[in-house]
Image (cartoon, rainbow, N blue to C red; front, side, top):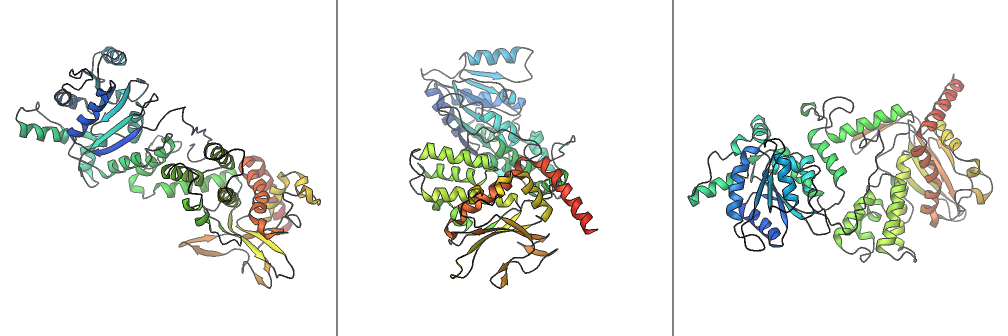
Length: 510
C-alpha cells in the first residue's frame, strides 16, 4: 500500500556511520569458490554463515565443508562446523546459535532459520547454496545477516549453471528440489565425489529464479535496497490483492506490474476526487537549447563533482527518481555538504540540474505536457512562458488559486511569486495566440497518439508573462511550485473545492 501511494512511508537513505555496502557475488555453483570464500574469512579470525535451503541436504554440505576447510583456521586447525535447523529438538537450535555467537564454532550451517533477528558482528561472510530456491525476501534478509560492524562484509549466492524454461516441471524442480538431492554419502572415489559435489548446487533453475537473482545483483550496491527489491518482486510475481488474501498476482491474467500500477494510480485519482491527472513526462523548451535528456544526463554535471563514477551514477539516479520536492531539497543539501564547499555557490550546471528536476515534478503534478517559452517580436520585447496542460480545467484552477493566500496574487510586484512577472499568472482553456498563430490548434475534447497511445482530454494553458526571458527557468519554478504543493499537500480540501467548482459550473451551464 505504501509503494502504491495509498499510505505514506518513511525511508531513511542515510546509512549508519562507517557502514559499508555488503559486497555481493552471485555466481554459478563451484565448490572451489565456496572454499576460497570461507578460507579467506577464517584466515582473518572471523566466522561465517553457510545457508542450505533444504534440511535433507545439510549432511552432504557439512561433509563437503569438513573436507574443504581442513586447516583453514588462523591457528592452522580444522574449522569447527555447527549445524542449526528447525527439525532439531526443542531448545537445541537456540543453544547452537548462542554457542556460535560466543565464538564456539567457525562456520554455522543452517537453513533460513537465521534470516531474522540474528546479529553476530564477528560474522562477515555468508554463503548461500542453491539460492535459486529462495524468494527475494529471504535472499535480502540473509544478505543482511552480515555487515553488522565496520568491517567489509561479503555475501555469496550460488545457483545452478543451467536454466529451465517456464513450466510445471520447472516449478516442481524449484519448489520440491528432489532432483537436486544427493541420495548417498559422498564417495571416496575422486571422479564420483566430484559429480556428487556438483549436484549439491542444484541441477537447473527457472526463469523466475533468474529474475530474482538479477534483481538482487542490480541493487546490491545500495545500502537501502529494500524498496527497490520490493518493487522488483511485485514485477516478477504479480501484485496480488491490495486488501485481499492473495499475495501474488495471477500469472494468467496478462496484467504486468507497470499496467497494474497505472490502473491503481487512475483509481486513486478518482477516489481522491482531484481529477488532475499527472502526466508521465513534460517536454520543456525554455529557449536555451537544453533538452531534458541533456540536463539530466551524467555528462551535464562537472566531472570532478563526484569522487567516482559509481557514486555519480547512483546519486543522479536517486535524484531523477525523487518523488517529492522535499526529497529534492534534501538531496541538494546533501550534495552541497558532501561533494561541495557549503560556503561557496554550487556549480551552475548542478543548479540547472535541480531546477529542471523541480520543474518536471511541478509540471507533472499540474498535468503539464509542454512548458514552452514564446517570444514576441524584438520591437515588443515581450516573452510568455506557457505550460500546456491536459485535464486541468477552469474550476480546477479556481480551486488551486483559492487554496493560496491572497497576497500571492496582489497587484504589487513585490508580492508576486517572482519579480520577473509583468502581471499575475493566469489560466485559459483551449489555445493561446502566438503572433498570429496558435500554440494549440484545437480546443475541447480531442484525441491524439503519443508514443502510439491514444490520449483524450481538454487542454488549457497556464500563462506567465515575463520581463526577462533569460530568467524563464527560475520564474517558472517560483510560479508553478506553490500550485503543485497545493495538490500534493492539500488533497482533501482541494478535492472539496474542486467539487464545489464543478457544481457551480454545471449550474451555470444548465
